Length: 375
Image (cartoon, rainbow, N blue to C red; front, side, top):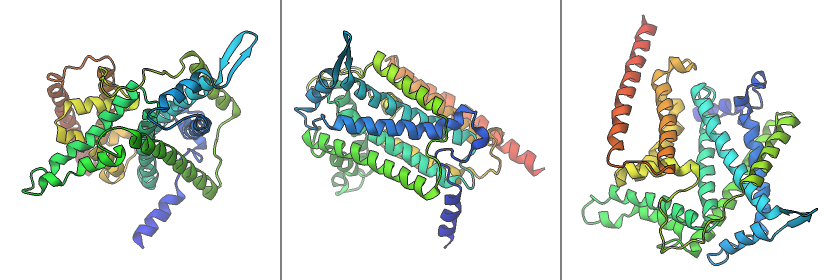
């Protein structure tokens, strides 16, 4: 009964798309909710259009992408060729990137503003889980291009769960058979290596997760009777125009057809996974496998770990500094791998030398504030 009451109270205060925060309507950080919904709808609609011509097979995926980009919807107006197929594909990519940006900025806004505190715990957990599902949808969609970068990025990501096998390796006699991590990888791969079963599963997951999230959004809007887009038409038109312009100037890349026998260096994924790649390089295999799961678990539990009453970030020094460090490492790791300038032997100790004193100082700050409040 207590759990039901807890959920009921939090449901009444759910505000997934900033529908009730009218007092902040001129603050761009409080446009992230409707912007997220808007870009997500653009992503879904453009994705459905691409499905009409996409072929989810190892032999036809890349060729279908080439056909979409170069042949489908080519319109000539006064000597100007408009590659509508390429434009739709690029809109799909950049709108999806915008969804991730909105998700990440919204998560950080909620974190630093203390919006996860009562009664916002459920909203935080839903949003954090939504980010995780969107990232899974992103990586499954990335492989569908079936070019070199996508193939090897997916292979690297699916290697991470295999590291979890070390958790059970120490168990006598049966430890070598309890390959939990390999089982997870096998479920996604559909076999011992990336192949037709993989692209079929990724295609299904990409479509399935997108539709499920869309249905949940619509059910939420229907049940709450709130506006989907609490924005004027001007920013909606402006943001869509920005996506179109970027898609026209920087069309989504094709790359080379996937070749399992030729490893590109460096192996890079889309930008939102680059920090994870660098983390995997820095850490031993077991921690490389455990880290993402622990991060998700701790992230989901933040509302229950932070017991302070105040929402002001400086009144929550431990979590405030932890959030700043997470943001710093996300940007730093992404930069290091993008420019291929990381020194794997040198930098992990530097990370520890930065993290330990900073978190130690934050802990002292936390104790000092508690001492002052108790006086």
